Length: 277
Ligand code: HH2
Image (cartoon, rainbow, N blue to C red; front, side, top):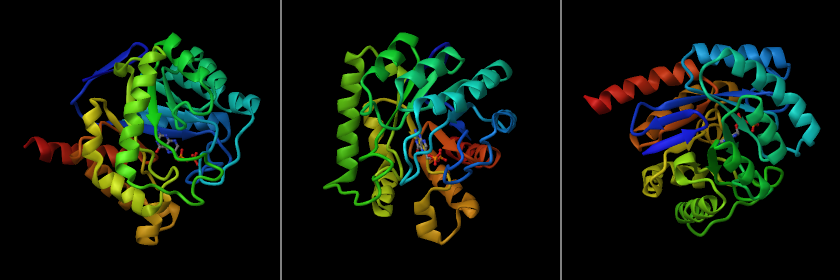
């Protein structure tokens, strides 16, 4: 299966892609404030690229539970200089983690070629037009509710069935909006309006989401359910993150969105070799 994002093309199955996280935010749950300064964010992106990242995901709005939305001008001010500078200096594709069409449009003009949309276009219908016109790649992530309130009382009858049905409905609507399936990857949205048990069910059944014929992206890196399971503080959740990454590769996940690129690349290369042996 093919994934196209601007000038980039990947044919799957192939080795797992590792997407390095560059949070240009003061308040992200795992690394808030560390890369808020644009020069430090760029330096971090370059470091992740050197560690073997296949993609970089630049975000200017935290989506941690309870986070307040960031005003448009502020989000633009955070992400654009970083994307512009990284696009000049790295050859790997850059994605922008945003739900705002204006931010997506300007980020794509500044050198990004993928829009990572954690709201799967429920916040503004013009976002898909921007993605379609730029022929950008698109990450369609499932979230119940919005970051400010999503963890208050997540409820599903059957989380796996509901997320899967959501993917089917979004793929159809995306195609109707000019974003064909070959530009889309799907993400179950670990921690986005989900309890620890919901996350575990989604992880256990990851392979079932390949039924949509699209590559799967997964973001588990340092997330709070790992703390619930192990008692580890955010900074100490690498082992749990790697356990999930390895599991995900065995279930057919194509792209891992992570903070710890070097460690994830190493773990993934080993498990891929085992699977191929
Ligand atoms: N998780 C986060 C942010 N964006 N995008 C996708 N597609 N999938 C995810 O699981 C995902 C995401 C949350 O992680 P992080 O960026 O580290 O934190 P914050 O939102 O607080 O900046």
